Length: 403
Image (cartoon, rainbow, N blue to C red; front, side, top):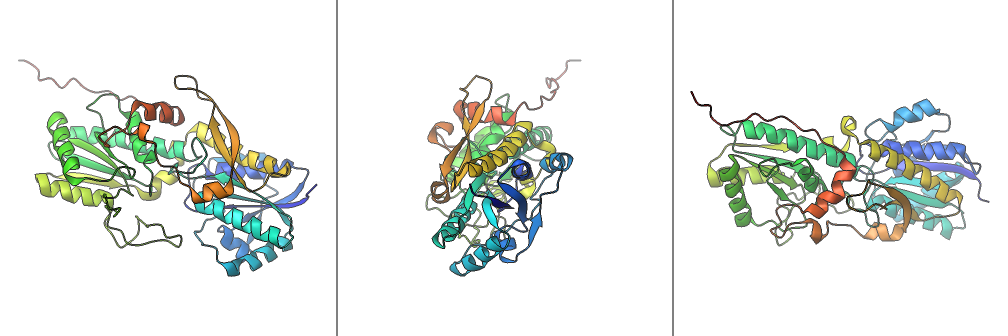
């Protein structure tokens, strides 16, 4: 019967519901008979290296309820890449605080961090259990139906494109096109979500560019021209990580983070939306807009989905229960139990950390139309239950009146 303290951290970019997962961990740890105190890493694994841990044991239900609805990463985050020399001081801190239960909320790199820390502790004879809690708006983690944070970010994108599409429609005599760029390094789940607000062929968006489909300039410009002629304007959504056939980022970004990932929002390259804007303007002589919201879709608590908050909280609770039962080196997953057309239902599952750390989950081909420029009904069946009902706006009859 392993008994001791728990440690939890948040790593990488935030989501609107990442603090709900943190609240779930704290709530379950406070109720545990095997966990005495629960600590939080200040700025992720960097806080362990700095011995800067926060005591989270004393927060009551009211505080945890408020934490669930708070955007960003309450503990603070970092993207520190672990090196061999880090493990000894990390273990020293873990022993000092008698940490026996180790939790982190994050994506692929975070799951790798948990796996490596737990394996190192095990190699020295220090007994500790580690469980990961999924987090990413990109929705590209392997082994789960979706990641906590994606539904809320997807709703943010869908509503933003829906509303900016109305603006573009009504301002078409001024601006003939609009481009909305989402985050997403190598997966198109988030730009694809823009289609969930579309009710009519004329509604935004008309074109969706996803990282899974190589960008072809001639094909793209032909589609742009066709949509503009048909609807009077064209709405385009692109993922920040779209590339050409040779794998070169359309954004032309050359900056990389410590994990070797291209930093699309960093200095060193034009954003994909800006590049496309320039291309369209030069080709057709049109005026248009580009909208790059960057991290706003990762922290927009006002558009957080109730289902997303509840599942994120539940994942945090489940992580603690798994560890209490002796399960280690797994990530909590969400498994959809309902079929298309049925009321949404899900359950929890697990996947080995080692599998999550080395694998990503792009959108499957069945979710992308054959021309590569939009999504299929199968994707809408997948995404719409997660996003929930979207607003329906009124449109005037624009037929010219007779005298």
